[in-house]
Image 1 (cartoon, rainbow, N blue to C red):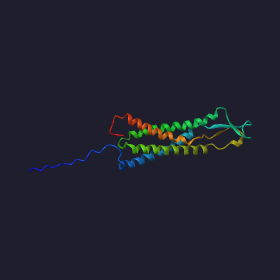
Image 2: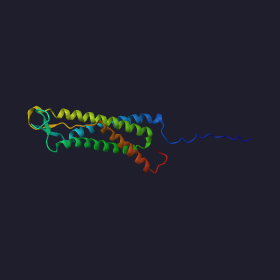
Image 3: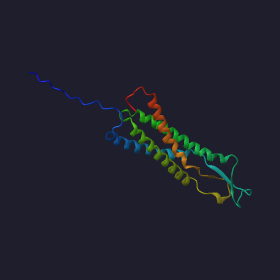
Image 4: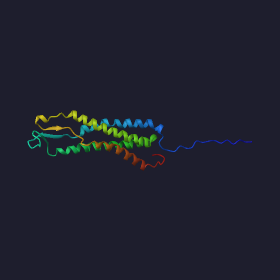
Amino acid sequence: MSAVHLQTHPAPSAPGAVVRADLLPAVSVLGAVALLGLPLGALWAWLAPPEFFARSPRAPTPGGVLPFVGESEHRFDDMATFLLFGLAAGVLTGAALWLYRRRRGPLIVLAGVLGSLIAAWLAMRIGLWVVAAGYPDLASTGAPYPRAPVLESSWVIITQPFGVAVSYCICAAWSRETSQF
């Protein structure tokens, strides 16, 4: 009498996010991406153009100052520079996360997007702090003086996480691998 031995094979695991295995890499990605805000803020502070002002008798307030002709456009330049830096950093971060093959998935994307949001916030705070320290208030001298670059809206921080999400999703859509997210 031969005994029939039934071998049990484990069911193949479905691809997707394994939360425990992906948690530590996701926290690492979040921290590493968030630290990207420090050099981005310093780079923005270095490259953002100041706005030049001078005292003017035609200013709306007595003893007030007015920007030189064409200088008021630098407020837009400051914001556009920050937006483009954030978008470029986000697109490159999303592409780099896609190349992290072993840990692809929704948890890594979420960590990248949240890390980018923190990075953009840090870049905004660091950049504004650096330019405030680099441009003293010289309004009382009467001579033309540069005013520190400004960001007139805090909504500029959404471009970097947007770039991460869009570039990662484009990489996922163009991928030939159907078993990965």
